[in-house]
Amino acid sequence: MNQKQRQQVQATVLENRQLCREHYRLVLGVADFAQTEPGQFIQVSCRPVEREDEISDDLQWDQQGRPEVCGEELAGRMALLRRPFSLAGRKQTADGVELHLIHRVVGVGTQWLSDLAVGERVGVLGPLGNRFELPRPDGMAILVGGGVGIPPMLYLAQRLAGRKAVAFCGALTRDLLPMTLLEGGTAGRVDAVEPLLNVEEFSRHGIPAVISTDDGSFGFRGFVTQALERYLDANAQAMAEAAIYTCGPEGMMKRVAEVAASRGIECQVAVERAMACGMGTCQSCVIRVRKPDPAVPPMAGKDWCYRLACTDGPVFKGSDLLW
Ligand SMILES: Cc1cc2nc3c(=O)[nH]c(=O)nc-3n(C[C@H](O)[C@H](O)[C@H](O)COP(=O)(O)OP(=O)(O)OC[C@H]3O[C@@H](n4cnc5c(N)ncnc54)[C@H](O)[C@@H]3O)c2cc1C
Ligand code: FES
Image (cartoon, rainbow, N blue to C red; front, side):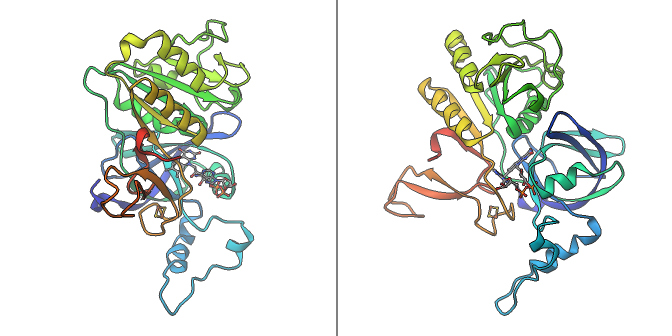
């Protein structure tokens, strides 16, 4: 990624719609935006744009000074730092570029985002991070998303339109699935892993999906990793050139990486470690990865080293990660 392409812009809210119990679809419009790729993310300033300058003032740290972080920030009523969100899609329109996000309300920043009205403005920094490597031309792409890890899978699906792909998405329950589910699409069986064109966001790109819920309220009853394993077992012949892409809770991604490794399938993992700056400055997002040659720095003598999830990632090879 060419860092010069990173931009800080004010976007206009074009849509902010509740998708399910805790998730919102947020569409941001900008006149122009650097090229973006599936797997990349943006940092969103979750405070009024007229108060955005306070962030950079607060964070102008020098050796003599101290940041002015006080009052409202310490009371926790307003997000001081920008919040990272994966791109869930991108669209070029006559008016400019739409950046699509799906966010789950978990705290002060996402609560603020959920209250945004159409026409309001939001500060955006990006694009950030690396990207998913697309599969070989004839290779099957297997997309595995869990919870807030589903959004980057939607952008990847957009890029894979017309290619061999299947999506697996999991959530605790139907009401936490941030997607447009088409009725009658589960074949009424809680043990079925047959991919169906029953999720609008994937089917519009010709990609069938397997949905799992822990409680069986939609699709396969169980973990998305169990659905994946069952599908791979039944389709072992078709997996020679396959690549698995995953994003979601770390426990889920770890299991997906193990399942892929045990079958010799390439696996790319997008990690969502908590991030402060999102661009390689604060070192808050370190992650341990394997190092092929222990003699080579950094961390000479060790067979692992730290990488930054924000700039070296968020996408890593599943086989490289030390969870
Ligand atoms: C690269 C990347 C991409 C992301 N993409 C998405 C996305 O597409 N959609 C989405 O809804 N969220 C996504 N997230 C997570 C999102 O950034 C956090 O949920 C958000 O920052 C929470 O902000 P808040 O102010 O609402 O919550 P806070 O008030 O900051 O925190 C609320 C609670 O959530 C926990 N929390 C905050 N961030 C994380 C995190 N990254 N991992 C685990 N727990 C966390 C906090 O510890 C706290 O318990 C992504 C994170 C990263 C690093
Ligand atoms: S988030 Fe600051 S270095 Fe990664």
